[in-house]
Amino acid sequence: MAVVETESHGQIFVVRINRPERMNALGFEIRSLLADAWSEFHESNDLEVGVFTGTGRAFCAGEDMKESVEAGTVVRYPFVHPGIFGCNISDFQNRSDDSAPK
Picture 1 (cartoon, helix red, strand yellow):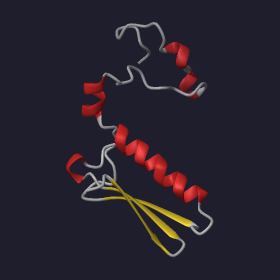
Picture 2 (cartoon, rainbow, N blue to C red; picture 1 turned 60 degrees about the horizontal axis):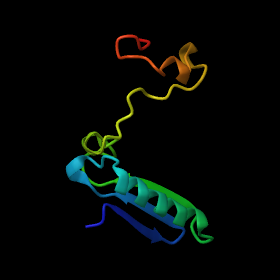
Picture 3 (cartoon, helix red, strand yellow; picture 1 turned 45 degrees about the vertical axis):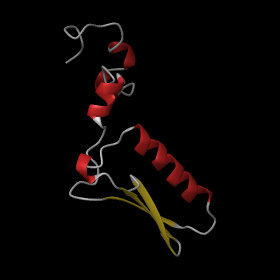
Picture 4 (cartoon, helix red, strand yellow; picture 1 turned 180 degrees about the vertical axis):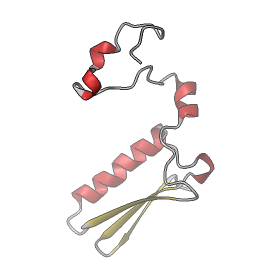
């Protein structure tokens, strides 16, 4: 069973995340396969419409936190775009959990 499936119907390209047991959470393998699928769509001269969907009860639960924790790749603080809420990334650098902006 492929965790990312693609199919074409004329000019329509369907990309489906197929990992319903993990609510289609995005792990490294899925992100890599999605990049390949969307590159295929982008490079095609025959495809005009892309449909992105997921198998099961959830389209996508977001980041696969179990995989990220096991791999040690969890981001400690989220990126905050400069100017949003008067914060920027430097507000989060070199701070302990107790001193981080709330």
